[in-house]
Length: 90
Image (tube, rainbow, N blue to C red; front, side):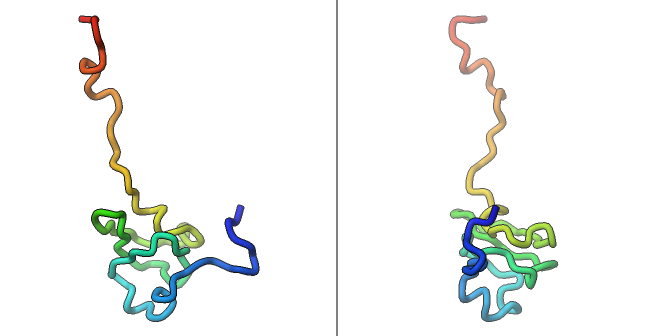
């Protein structure tokens, strides 16, 4: 289901529209911009709030937002310290 009206089109920041050659292998701070077909087979660095994350753009990612591929949360494995949360049991 599209988020924007069809007549509005996809949101892409102005600096991404200017020079495609300038953007290749560069940092992108605009996580809200949509990925256009022009970026296919390019690798970009998407800023996640702390460090840039390298992402290879494929045809399956066209239409999504850049921010969907640069996670901002750390993955924490669950159940690793099972002894820490148990009280009263040995």
